[in-house]
Image (spheres, rainbow, N blue to C red):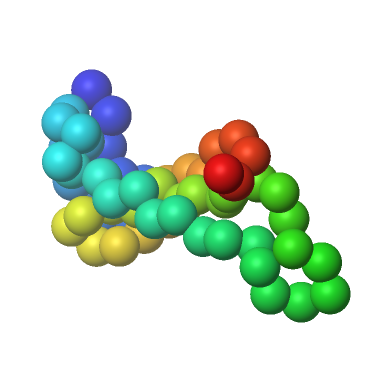
Length: 56
């Protein structure tokens, strides 16, 4: 079983985490990829993140 490192909430369902998509369209360059953050639904702590392919 997986638990949140901050609040120790059990993360067993897809609904236990929130996927937040962030566009890289600010600053000097617009990135061709989408970035995402995975956060605990209980406390909002960031659990992970990554890159999710090219923007359409």
